[in-house]
Amino acid sequence: MRRFFVEELPSQGETLVITGSEARHILRVLRMGIGDRLVLMDRRGNRFQSRIESARGQEVTVLLEKRIPAPLESPVEIILCQALLKARAMDFVIQKASELGVQQILPFTSQRTVVKTGDDKPSARLRHWREIAVNASKQSNRARPPEVALPCSLPELVERWQDEEALKLVLWEDEKSQGLRAVLKEAARPRIIVGITGPEGGFRVAEVDRLREGGFASVSLGHRTLRAETAALTLVAILQYEWGDLHL
Ligand code: SAH
Image (cartoon, rainbow, N blue to C red; front, top):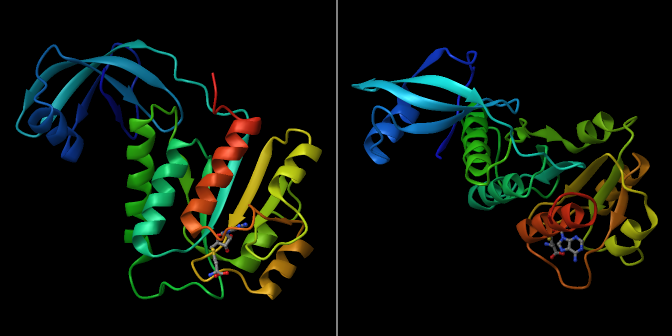
């Protein structure tokens, strides 16, 4: 059954009117009609099997027939802090990290960030990222899309996680003494993992020092220099495999 995210779900037995792009998608693209069933989900993990009651113009009225269970989310909460990348790479990271089940994506600016921020409207960009996260979550049948935040600075990031009980990692391309594998072997399964990955231009040493002071362990993914997006998604996949739900 096709799945759709909506802002608010009414109760079982009640109806909901869907408008806008979702309605257009249901009627025009999927060519669904009266009597067809679909799944409605909110962003908190509630789902209902629903049936189309009526459709006219750009409005679809659906009846919420019965509550259905949502798939479980990963037992580890992975927070991916990604230095801003060029638009396509950033979109790619957000899409794939959403599929891989991260709970939050926190973009941040760093000293070697190549993309210019400032000028384009942050709200438009955030809307675009959230839409990517929602679509990826729908496609991969997640209970909830990850949160995507407005970009912050690196010091703000450090401050935010200062007193948090979490495994805190920063992927550093110049790390020579500590590999991710060794860190994972030693740590017990954490509830929260905060993983930071750099921009196309990499990190400055001073930035890594600041992160270390803030309790982040700098780790290497081996001697090959990966593109930022490859590094980010490799980290998430390894963490989900090791401690999360990248298995049955
Ligand atoms: N321009 C830099 C490379 C930056 S790679 C250089 O030439 O040295 C972009 C980001 O991906 C890095 O900041 C880091 O977070 C991550 N990354 C890439 N390869 C990595 C590796 N082998 N180990 C750890 N992190 C890596």
